[in-house]
Image 1 (tube, rainbow, N blue to C red):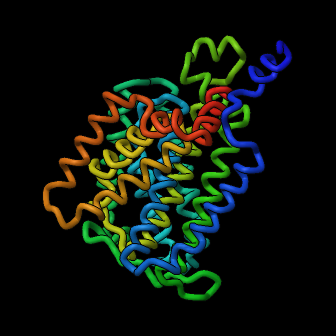
Image 2: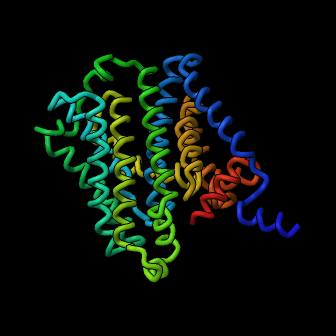
Image 3: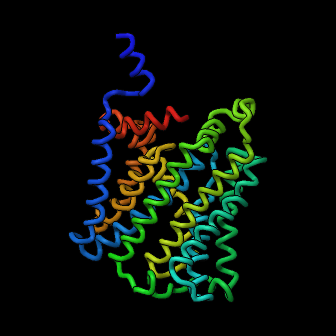
Amino acid sequence: MDKTLSTSKETGPMTGPPGGSKRMALLALLLLLCLLPLVVNDYLQFVANTMLVYCLVAVGLNVVLGYLGQLAFANAAFFGIGAYAAGLSMVHFGLSFLWATIIGAACGGLAGCLVGLPALRVRGYYLAIITLAFGELMRWLYVHNDPVTFGSGGFNMPQIAVFGVPVDEQGKYYVFLAAVLIGVGATSLLLRSRFGRAFVAVRNNELAALSLGINVNRSKVIAFAWSGLITGLAGALYAALNGRVSPDTFGISQMLMHFAIVMIGGLGSMAGSIIGAVLLTGMPELLRNFPGLEEIVFSLLLIIVLFLMPKGISGFLAGRLPILRERLYRESKDA
């Protein structure tokens, strides 16, 4: 009896599905995602593509906000930098979409390193103000640098092609799905590594992390850089999705959207990032025929989650869905 109790304490909750069943469930979900373009029209395909883009956006923001615990609002800036870097590299230099996407992600990562430097000195509301100012500075550069960025009017993206083959909305879906799988998978590996555990230690108590020999400054810069990389990748995909890039897309309203996705889905949860992205990008489409109702439902949802579900929807569902409960248990154990 004692041995059984000891085993259960070491391995976590015994209510979750066995590893084989969980892998089968994930494979079944992946198969359904691959088959989705066969059963939806072009409009719903566009909505699905948008959901994939915002899944990456939410994951990128959650690294800094949820796991590192830094109140930073530069995500919209990373998003715009990724979109502009990818689009302009195609327009000015004639690069292919895949290379442009890599450049967009890399520029987002470099911007993340730059934004991470103030986080070494300030925190809290001061960091929030600095990162918001960085986003507005980038918008100013987009508007007033006409020869490069085409000014306030923005520019149209060239035809998207992969290995020389033009892609439609269905083709974009598979490219975006591959990018999401790579981005989410790589982020999960990072968060389970010693770097991810360092992020959580810094979030919980910086002084305690220092006493344990954790390089707090390095952890902050790595987290911001990775957040910028993933969000820059999302920005590059967003430019391809809409076929147009303009500065008014990447303002404070975009940042509020990102913040709401993470808060409603669940801070410090990869599953929460995906749930929030799917819910908040799909909800406007469901309510499009009811003018004014979208804002009301959005506000009520945010209030309900903040007051009744402080851990977000993922935390609320964790007590009811075993696979999510086991996932969150592993994340808390790593912390």
